[in-house]
Image (cartoon, rainbow, N blue to C red; front, side, top):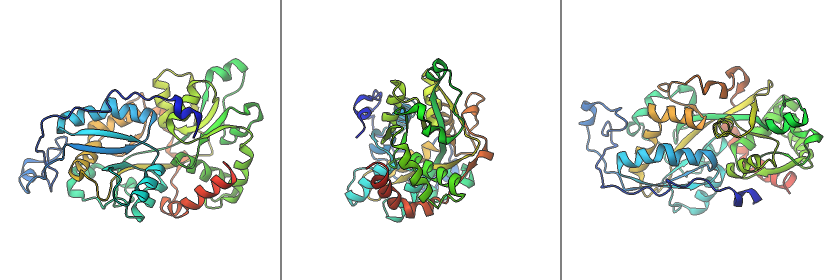
Amino acid sequence: MSKYDEEFKPDRSARSVTRREFLELGLGVGGALLAGTVGQAAAAAAPAPKLEGELVFGCNGGGTQRIFEQQIIPDFAKRYGVKVTYVTGQPADHVAKLSAAKGNSGLDAVWLGGATTYVAADRGLIIEIDRSRVPNMQYLDPKLEFEKSVVPIAYSGNCMIYRSDIYTKRGWAPPTTWFDLWDPKLKGHTGMYSTSSTGGIEMILQVAKELSGDYKKLDPAFAKFKELRANVLDFFPTAGAWETAMQQGDLWLGVNSFTRAKEMTDAGMPIKFVFPKTGMPLHDLPVGIVKGAPHPNAAYAWIDYLGSKEVQEKIADKMGYMPASRQAVLSDIVKPFYPDRSLTWMPDWRYVGTQFETIVNRWSREVER
């Protein structure tokens, strides 16, 4: 465990949402009033399943958690009369817990990403989505639909984030490449996610692609990351730990998502970000319904709500994720936080999913041992 895990204290002001009087809002085939997306004729077509009064949602910590708890969950709770419990963890951590729990995890819905999506689907940890119960899926960007067991909510990818005040004070030029992490002048002050995060996996794939021309050839990348141990402050296990280290000034240059870059900029932190010209992989950020979920109807309401135009625009404006819905309109304020699409590429995440455990185990053995 990173020391920063104990120091980071996310805002939990909306963590326990007061349960309101039970509302009988539907989710069936054209049956529910979900963000006003279902027509009256469809609404009369089938009886509406009753919503349970609770939802347990597993998702990332840090700024993502704060935005969910402050900007998204309260409105959902008010609209549907559902108490939401937010369980913090990286996607890989949640998948591991679901695997160990054997259907008794207590989670209803889980935020995934990259290879973890396919690991969860192939292990039968999440159910196939009934599209008729998620009307907002009709507005998804078709390029983001990969797996029948999830609903894409957004997508993200890595960038370089650095403490601009420290760089200015020392007269350093801004970083330009991923390999600036290895710069000896930054010894003890660089960092990236561990393989518990999709961002960590993406960094391995990008370095492999640059060193060998093929992101599936990982040997050169692992050899390179062994050299990084002398330079790195930490391979961070959580978003909160990474953000705390950057905020405290211990981390001077790191790899994180352009989502975090926006969050920290909005928070007034002295950081700047760079999109290296050699490119970066992207991953979709979907939500799945857990097999054996205690509150499946509430889970369907939740994922459809996340796909609504209003929430999709909040996800872009407040979180910095690129929205998955074609309904969402990006403001000029957030556009600079997204890379030019010519710089991005999409790995075969199903293939990466088949290699996921091998990559994680090798990383633990060879890099973080």
